[in-house]
Length: 187
Ligand SMILES: C[S@@+](CC[C@H](N)C(=O)[O-])C[C@H]1O[C@@H](n2cnc3c(N)ncnc32)[C@H](O)[C@@H]1O
Image (cartoon, rainbow, N blue to C red):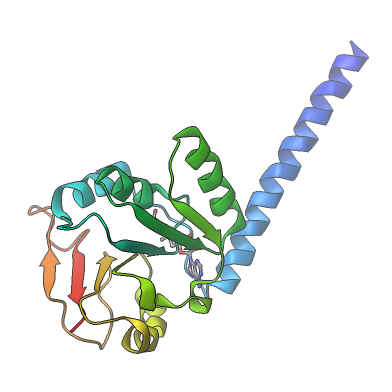
């Protein structure tokens, strides 16, 4: 019986260590991202993407800046896009993404890296679900690196004090202020 209690105590300690590591990873990532939390899109929001975002050509290179557990990337993969990469700084979100990628037999590329350290010039489509403060910091990078003909899809947040979006998708007419998708075509 005593052995069983020791076993239970051991399990509790292991769970507490794992939860602690996840919390530490989230906190550390929050500091590094200057406050952009790991908040993945919900299922209904992924369905909006499936319904409203169309790609004419599947042979494009797509990147998600702050890819979380890669769920958006797997949606785009199912839509037929072949070359998909996600950059994520949060260790826990990245690890979860790698596990899900294996389980779901996905071929998207997931990188544990700060997206400020990559060059965007090779990508045709940039997806982001970030706060406006983070988008503000990205404006210069977009201006310098994105090639004409490329596209930015920004979920929920407009890029502050930048070009006007070429398209604003309002997926839910009953709540037009929520879940807007801003599309920018780079000229
Ligand atoms: C709101 S979540 C979106 C996650 C995913 N794109 C989705 O829609 O489910 C934003 C993510 O961006 C990541 N992030 C923020 N700044 C980053 C940076 N500089 N480099 C890499 N990832 C970053 C955060 O860690 C967070 O997981």
